[in-house]
Length: 169
Image (cartoon, rainbow, N blue to C red; front, side, top):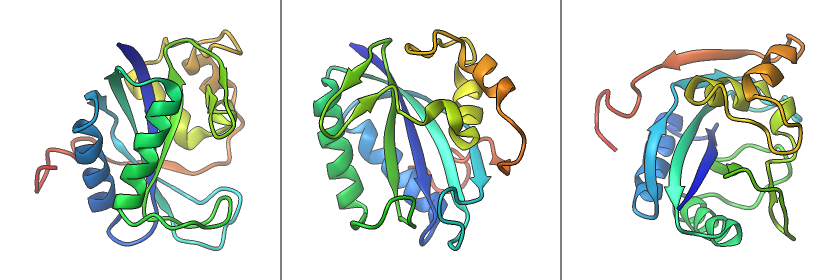
């Protein structure tokens, strides 16, 4: 089984419900072992849109990187994701951040995620779950990468037990 980390984000509709439903659907396809706290973040790349809720899920899967991307796209489409421009608003976004310690370059997927090391909104929840995991290209723990990021990007913990509070996924 492969050990993977997935980035989850939503900034349209009921953002928390979108993320809960995404985790529920992903659990049908792989073993989700842990999910980070929920973080609210400002949009990156295209600022004129609503804030995002973000989280990171840790999972075990038998799927290949390409197979994992295929099921992620199916989950996104089932939750109403529509084609949009890069960095645009979306009901749900699921990204493969890390897949074991491999480096993979496919037509539609790069692992590790090519901007992982630049994004506080991904690194903070990832470090919450696995501070010592090593970026397979930079060969540094993600906690060290986060520590070296310049300040500026707003990332705020909103809720720790968001999957268990209220309605269960």
